[in-house]
Image (tube, rainbow, N blue to C red; front, side, top):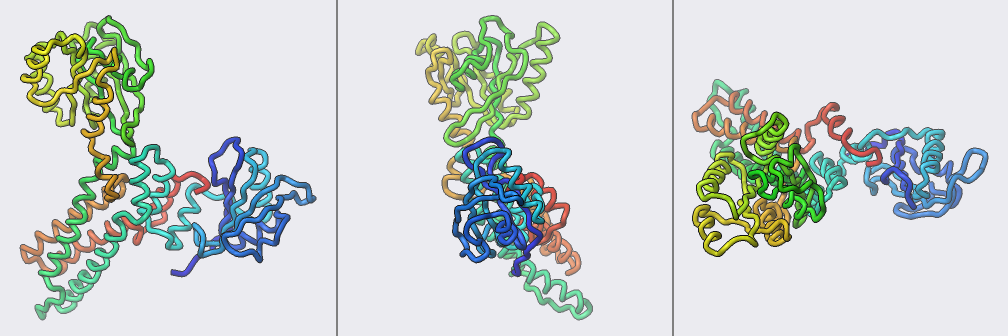
Length: 460
């Protein structure tokens, strides 16, 4: 692939704000020459790639803006595959703006969001899935999301899909060739081999499609709702999990009227904990609104913690709660609070009724909280998937194209079994190819690229 050297662009590559060091990135045709015009030190235009040089950035009148370190990267051995200079200066907002101003005076344009990564993609540094992983890697805020993004950046599933797509392209070409000999009843594309290829592709697709629920939780956090009767200890549990006084705790039933949310990291997974109003018959309009919000949060949740007061709950009430949790279709944990008040017989009675495991805690005494955290981690089961280095789909766009490919191949397989004509078969295969091509970026539009890279930070 030939390297495209586009007009030079520049932007702050480090986070905005005052800091010890800031890095400005310049990339594009003439980037080294243009930077050299404002740099006083060694002549950057004759320096080897991947070398750093101390000097100063100066105003047109020769006055010094700052002492800097200029690092030269010659294309194609750079992130964008263009000529690149990275200027490390002091992290003063004034200094940053003055250097950017000097660069624009020499003909450098300020970069748009994600434009450096977009140029890297256009120059074949990586495919579109890997390019999007750059943004995910920057935004990763947990061990799991970091590993998932890193796996994607290293190729993830896209390389395998590109190879399978090429094989499918070869078969589509043969099927369409048959259309030119429609009256001669010839078969260039061997149907058994085509069926096996479609089966092989779908075997790759299915684990990726199924991983999206895990991947979405890794990327965005697991919405985890704490529900139960009033005074079960929901707010106390939230405080115990967070190890801070986040929610107001009171013996008065119905204290929590609104939704309280915070985040907790367990084994590299981000949980979005949501404390809710107690589930009961509302006594006033405000409480009724709170309970309705609780029910909505339960519908939106990825995981439900059903907390009950082990001292006062009746066995049939526990059975009813378990039945409601099962009907919700959501993963849930049964958590019995006030363990310190339980007799052995009472605990056994509730465990016999529940049949399934109960996590026993005393939220007020912080007893059993570590056990609950481990149970939450195991219930989500994201860690094992990511620890193995398996590719996990975290992007809704990827999921959409993977399912679109699978649907098209499933339809093509049914058509193959039914003996459809080559034109109908080719149509389904072209739809599958379109989805795979848009997924990896082999088929793109300007609108698609603008939409993807506009979500990046300016200097990336």
